[in-house]
Length: 166
Image 1 (tube, rainbow, N blue to C red):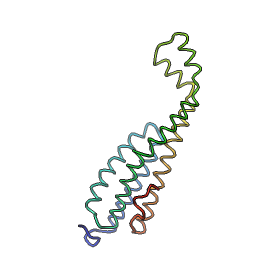
Image 2 (image 1 turned 180 degrees about the vertical axis):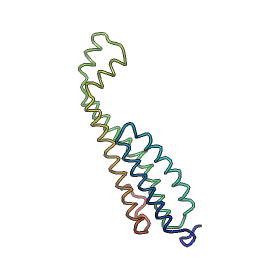
Image 3 (image 1 turned 90 degrees about the horizontal axis):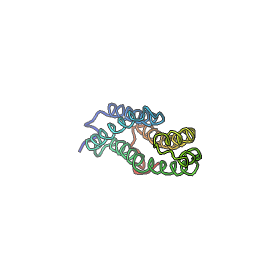
Image 4 (image 1 turned 90 degrees about the vertical axis):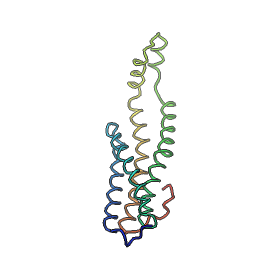
């Protein structure tokens, strides 16, 4: 078991601060469709590193910070993001303009590519708004969690209620 005396507190505070900032950047990249893959890759790297460091720092105030980062990833990626995506998809299916697609299919059009282009052209603004709203809510939640952890680490305190969803 590692004790606080055996680790350099200042270095660990700086490391946690850097990881929180990297998590915020990873979250913000999700707002850009083309950069989101880099954000996901960064978040996965932070996740693996957090698992390693949490085990090394068991029993110190830093353990809660790595636990917080790990929970943020799993709650956000496997619970929160899928739920808001399903809700957004339901809204899209309810609100989508299908008139041009229906007309094209009734005239005998069978090209899936053409029909998808019609669907996108008729609903581009709706799709973009749905994506930004869905991802935007996720980014706000994720950023809030990282800023909360950052506030605790700057005061050199463990994250209170590290098992909470907010």
